[in-house]
Amino acid sequence: MANTSERGFFTSRIGIILATAGSAVGLGNVWRFPFMTGQNGGAVFIILYIGCIFLLGIPGMVSEFIVGRRSHANAAHAYQEISGRRSWGLVGYLGILTSTIILGFYAVVAGWCLQYLGVSIAGQLQGDTAAVTTYFQQFSSHPVKPALLGVVFILITHFIVVRGIQGGIERASKLLMPVLLLLLVIIVIASCSLPGSLQGIEFLLRPDFSKVTNEVMLEALGQAFFSLSLGTACLCTYASYFSHHTPLFKSAVQVAVMDTMIAILAGLMIFPAAFSVGVQPDSGPSLIFITLPNVFQQAFATMPVVGWLISIMFYALLVFAALTSTISMHEIGTAFFTEEHRLPRQRAAWLITSCCSVLAVLCSLSVGAVEGIGLMGLSLMDFCDQLTAKFMLPAGALLTSIFIGWFANQQVVRNEFTNRGTVATSLFPAYQFAVRFVLPILIVLIFLRQTGII
Ligand code: PHE
Figure (cartoon, rainbow, N blue to C red):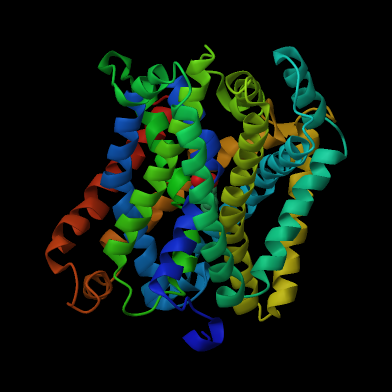
C-alpha cells in the first residue's frame, strides 16, 4: 500500500475530530433523530439512544479506527492486511457497497434540502398546512427537479473529495462544522424563547418509562448506528488518515459526545417551536419538510423577518450537515478505486459519482414520478434505506467486532488501542469485553428480532 504521505493524512487533531464528527453529524441528527424521538416517546428514547451510543457505539467506533489506523489503507485492503486473509477483505467491500448505496438515496434528501434552502431564501415557503403539504408532494414527485438536485449534491461532494484529504475533506470540515454549530445554537435560542416552548423542552427531558417497548429499543439502536456512521467503513477509511499519535478511544468519545449533543440540540431546535404552536411532534419523516415550515411561519408570525431568517438558517444547516456526511461516504469508494485499482483520484471519484448519481436518479423517480421502481413492495428509496439501516450497517458492525474481538492478533489490537502503551491502557479489558461479547450478542439479538424469530 502507498505510504502515509502519498495517501494524504489529516494534519491536526482538530481536523481529525471535525472531519470524523462531520461524517457522523448529518441528516441522521437533524432530520432522523428528531422525528424518531417524536415517534418513540421523547425523553425515554433519548436515554436509550445515549445508552446505545456509549455501550455499543464507542467500542464499535474504536474497532473501525483500529482497522483503519493500523493498516493505513482503504477499507477492502485494511481488513485483508490485518488478518492476512483475502476473505476478511469482504467486510471492507461490504462497507464500500453500503456507503455507496447510502450516498445514492441520502443525496436525494440532501437535494430536497437544497431546494428548500432556495425556496426559503426566495421567501416562497408560505401558506397554510395544506399548501405546504401539496408543495412537498408535488416537488418530491416531480420527474426532473429533485433528481437533478440529488445529482448536483453528489457533484458538490465530488469537487470537495477530489481535492484530497487535507485540501478537500479537512478544510471543508473545519469550515462547515463550526458554522453548523453556530446556526444550530442560534435557532435553539430562538426556538426556546418562544412562548409555550417549555412543553417541548419537557417532552425532550422528562422521561415516561411506560413508553419503553422492544420496538423503541430497536429503533434507538438503529439510530445510534446510523448516526455514528457505524458499519459502513467510513470510520475505518477516515482512521487510515490518522497519525500514530491520535488517541483512538479519546477521539471516539469526543466524536460520540459531539454527535449526541448535536442530535439533542436539533431536538431543542424543533420541539419547543412545534409545541409553542400546538403541533404534535410525531409526524414522521415529513417533519422537516411539511411540519416545520408551518411551525416557523406560525411561531414567528409577529416577526416575519426573523421567521424568514430562521427558515434559511435551518435549511442551510441541513445542507451543511448532509455535505460533511456525503463527503465521507464518497471518500470510501474513491480511496478504494484509487488504491486497489490504481486509478488516478479524479477518475476514481468520477466512477463513484456516476454510480451514485444513477442510483440517486432512480431513487428520486421511485418516490412518485414513475410507478414501479422498487423492490419487495417498497419504493427504491425506501428499499435502499431499509436494506442499509436494518441489515447492512448492523452486519458491518457485527463482522468488525467479531474480527477485532476474535480473529485479529490481540497484541496488535492492544498496541493500537493504547498507542503502544502510552494511552488509556486500563480501559483495554473493558473495551475487549465489549467487542467480544456485548456488541456481537446484542446485534445478533436485533437481527433475530427484526426477522421475527424472537
Ligand atoms: N452518520 C450520518 C448521519 O447521521 C449518516 C452516515 C451513514 C454517514 C453512514 C456515513 C455513513 O447523517
